[in-house]
Length: 309
Image (cartoon, rainbow, N blue to C red):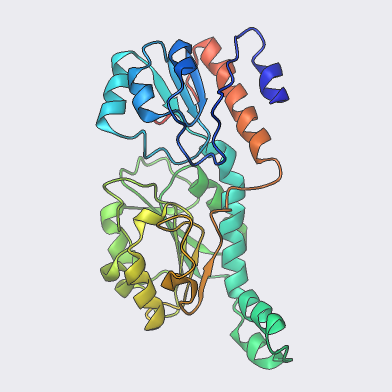
């Protein structure tokens, strides 16, 4: 808050009186927002529509599906306003989290941890034999946004074959072979690792379904660090229980929190982190720093970083 107050000098900063405990929760309507030109956080979508003075909304998340509606887009466009997200603030931690998952799977870290918490047997040879070198393997990344591009940079030196999907390839993509979203089925069968970074939305709901899991190799691993709604979780559970795929690593689920009795918790080779991929000890400082950099751009009339609407 000190960084935010200091960095917004010259502007009148209004602090909401109804802050939520999580940055993933939209705030309740706040009368003070109706007097503001800029909103930083997760303002109520209906108020984004109705707040006539609001010229720019800086979201504190990479996801923006609650604002990606026809009503919000129409209202924002009608008054020449803008919405930006915080993908740039989250690209590094989420990309590192994905890399950690890939390496943990290859080096059998879940197996060794389970052994330490359980029988504590010195299973040297079976675990050594099960470890894999990822050099030469293929990683298919679903999506080519800010986080995907940073993950590609982290994976490139490890000698992997990298493929990424994009709805509309532009031709200027670097670091990976790009395929159109409608071509994903043709490459799923060659991937050793499938990393989903897809956002939520009508086009991506249940994108990873039974048919697509069936196209994956039985030795392949699935990772989801995008949004839980993009995966048919019953199909994923079935794919794990029938050994249709080797393992799954999930940082996002539907719903969140995932109930303790959800079958994914006990599905074989399913490893879950509770939406922590974007987290680190300086998370909120990074969000404020990102907002303040964008504020300087806003003041200068320059293009905002991570503009989504």
